[in-house]
Length: 276
Image (cartoon, rainbow, N blue to C red; front, top):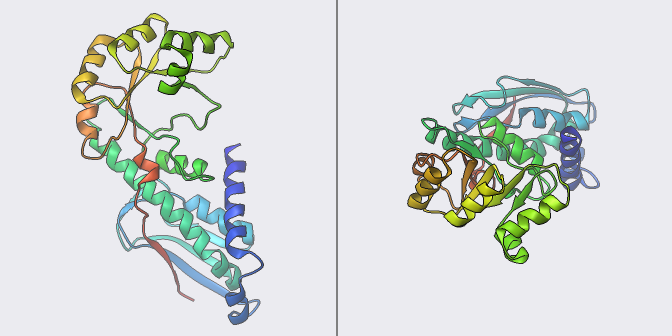
């Protein structure tokens, strides 16, 4: 399923860029010409998207050779050769920007994720992503998080129950929201948002074993961890930054979800240099 989703995304991106044809390349580059190139890192960071970039070229022409010189998830310095490519010149030039767009975005996310992961490495906290991804790119954004050392939260609305504040308000209470979900006979994991220690107690009494503590300051987080006593897995969420994540992790929560991994990561800088 994931491979099919990614392939669909790559085809959409190529169609968007190429349209009726790469008119500049077709007018300048002779049909049958061959090129060799190198993809170079122009900044330091964590690489993600080499396999994706390779697939972009493969979709254009199976004769294109893509030889990765490192692997997704590896840390690299500026100047590192990430991959060598060779094949039909027209198609290499046509696919260059699309391949680099994916590589740079994914490597930016992986680099950002690694920074968060390193910041909490002295604790038990696991860094999670969110659904705050670019529309149409979720599979790739979440893959990049994995390459950066984070873990994926739910992929979409269909693979996990997450009862949040609006659901609770609509149902009238947290207890009623949980009961309605269970009455539906779901076998999916259930996570609920607790806004107070009373909510936390309600969730624990009803056998919920994964609880979201949203937008809590450090003292309430510590109180919740102590009150929980290890009975449920606790997730901290809400405006967590690289500057604050260490203190959040040190409260003793199990998970920290960070929207910034995918909605605010800086793009990595890699480019393609033609060598022959």
